[in-house]
Image (cartoon, rainbow, N blue to C red):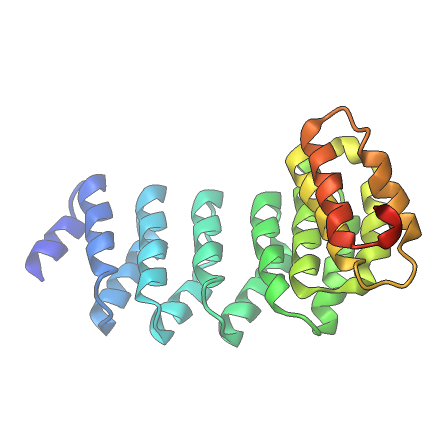
Length: 231
């Protein structure tokens, strides 16, 4: 009530606490107050808190506010809105994130959106976009990594040759933990292929990698590949 309205006009800490309290309600007025904070508060941490509160409320109205709030100039807030929206398994959220992906310039935020496409198997537009992002280059290969994670989540075995080619392309650009999980994704996606020899050879080569995490990732991937010739 009045206490909350007072906090909303107060200092940064007061506004952040007010946003958290509003997240414990689900009435129209609370959603509208959070919408106002997300759109106009001068401080990014308050806008971030508002996005989290709307995610917590989790109703249709909160989802619509988030879908209409992606135009955030501060990347930290935009990422929070993306994370919040990705919690809603609804076409409105999926469409808003899809549109955002076409315009998003920040690779970390784009990678967050791409990972949500793991829940969209059989969608031809998404399949084409994942292959495009797999081929792209970015800092630490964040975007290619996200595409590989989504293809694994979809269990899209047809992507295995493209992933193999991508991992051979410029392995030093990947950070070692991501590369190790990409190796495992490759083993997983190729596990039902009749001829797994090219992938098995590539994974076996990684057993000699100087980095332990990549050797371990390759060993795990060979186990996942379940190829009798690998044992």
